[in-house]
Image (cartoon, rainbow, N blue to C red; front, side, top):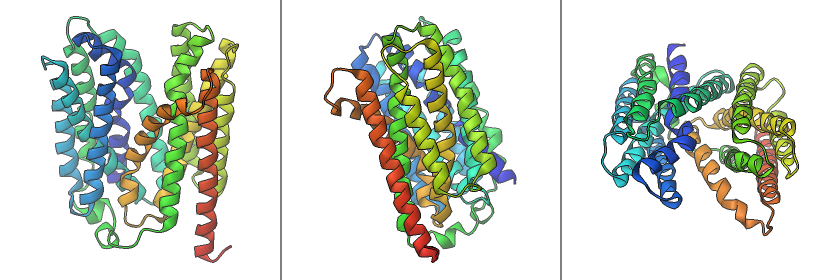
Length: 376
């Protein structure tokens, strides 16, 4: 029980720097007086670092000692994060954000691998997503209060202090593979079923849809004439809806089968996005934000659980954080694909396309899964 609890805490707290990016990017850019285009390098560097850290765990998972690995990764992430506040130039800040992301990526992948091998992976992933939403609310509320035009150090100290909580969580992990990730060393050489890859593709597509609306929801609210403070409040309330979605996923797991929950969260996400329009009122914005964030919070545990169910190697499960953040990063880049001057239509079209793909691929995966089990 202790290793699973430690893994949940790691997965929830390790996203600190990632959820801070919407505010951290302009804070760092303002401190070094760089333009908006260059500022994007901060988030990109952190994302790439997260991907590298997760891939490291994926490749070397059978050989890693979970507790020791987590402790070193947490210290590495904290040291890199506080370095951002001390570095004298923008290039150094970008490099250190990449290194901080690498430490976080190791922790996220290790967390996913351990929870994926637990008896009830959906429940574990649900608790992780709920904790991540709580961390996001806390970080986004506190970060503006500690930021200073004169120095990045207060921001770096705040983020580092929060990530230091990763250390006690790391000590909850066992330091032997057989105890933390049962039978992983003997399973890892096995062939990964095609259903695992299909569910991973569906998860990526769902993350693409989430990334689109996560990036553009505030912009769309502004275009509709809604005050920025009210937009922020609506998104904070939406994070509570995300927590509710995660807890529902943790409570229901596979009680309603495998496909129905995946279908439901995808439809709810698309329904929420369809409510965004140039003439929407504040109440409609609240409803739309709550729907898509509820679907996000509930959908990620369901998709991650679907991957983990057949992934006896643990390798694909370990890289799920990379798949999620990669999808969320790719999503906004696809918006210009739809040739229309109306941003609302572009966002809706991209989200619908990604959501429908997630449903179709999940359906194919489930059919193949049932066929392999001899029940179709």
